[in-house]
Amino acid sequence: MKTIVSFLLLILIVACNASSKDKKPKDDSLQYYPPTPVTMDQQEFRRYHRELNAFFDTTLLNKGFNGGILIAKDGEVLYEKYVGKIDLRKNDSLTSSTSLHIASTSKTFTGIAILRMVEEKKLSLNDSLEKFFPGFPYSGITVMMLLSHRSGLPNYLYFMSNNKWGILPNGKWNRQYASNQDVLKMMYDKKPDPTGRPDGRFNYCNTNYVLLALIVEKISGKSFPVYMQEKLFQPLQMTNTYVFTLKDTLTATPSFTNNSTYWNYDFLDATYGDKNIYTTPQDLLKWDQALYTDQVMRKSLLDSAFAPYSFEKPSIHNYGLGWRLQILTNGKKVVYHYGKWHGSNAAFARLIDEKATIIIIGNRFNRAIYDAGHLSYDIFGDYQQRKVTESDEIDSVKNTLLKPPPVKTSKKRKD
View 1 (cartoon, rainbow, N blue to C red):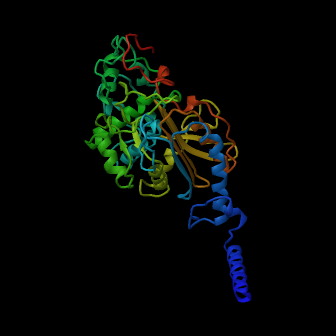
View 2 (view 1 turned 45 degrees about the vertical axis):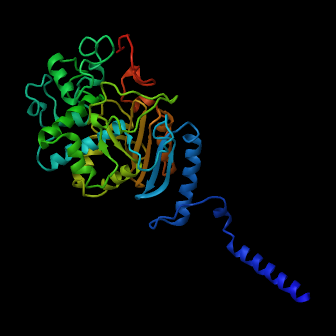
View 3 (view 1 turned 90 degrees about the horizontal axis):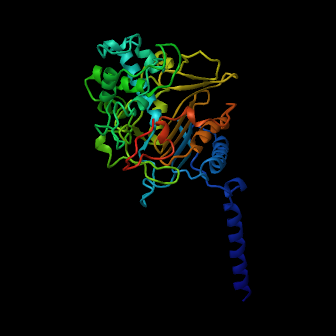
């Protein structure tokens, strides 16, 4: 009997010692951590991971977010999360391979495509638009002015919505979907009033990037979606990235209002260059990382995309060639582009000093994406961020910001 009791006590002691040895440090016992990136110290990685978890839990994930988030440093993922549904009307979970509409963040790709053509000596930033569009009814405008939003051209989102020019009483444009060529033709035919003189001031205008996409097509002899796929997306292995065309209407990830109402396609959904790139956070990280190398273009030309060109009013905000900029008084600089189209929101920012990348994409309209994007900069350094107004990121027509166009209506569309 004594032998049995002694044996049981021995087993108990061994088990207790094993349990004590297996216990993780208190820090690890409270939270799971992904594997530490090879290039980063474990303590630094875990600090970032904890802080980003707490940050997004309180600024975005508790505010009805539906989409994907990816935060990286030196190309290493610190935080990645996918929440919600691809289609809110179905039971299909959104994943890392779900392509989402990034709205005006698409301009970063269009701008770089043009600069690559400059590097290849296929065009010059000082080329006049008449070179590509003979008889263009707005004189004195260059490629550079399109890239930097200093053309003074009218915004097609508004002049294409003008009832007397393109919209029938039932609220539909008379050709259903307007193409980039339709935008150009209306500028020739109707000559809508410019917003200013060429190079007079900065005025954010989607027409600029619709025309830039047409220039890419003129020079390359290929459609803009095909050119972008061959020259950028495929070489960078951005396997879930494409330029939307009408053939994609049945398969593209839909977008929704903040109250989960499906946002119907409308007549402005077929234009590209200014918008209509669908991608994923992981593919955007590949884009970000490529821009730190010379595989896209030589550094001096790439740096010109990240330089400011508008100085009419003193401000920390400026615009490069396809990129928004924040140039802070403490020397910090943010290279970024956010966007909104219908129910899709996108935030994409590059903190050059820390080589940190912020990527947030959602397909259910959510203003909190913009605040979370900007405020997250301060996790990496003194970026002096405050809440931002949505007006800096909006691409949609005024009367369609918060609700989708009706499927059927007898009322005229408001300008």
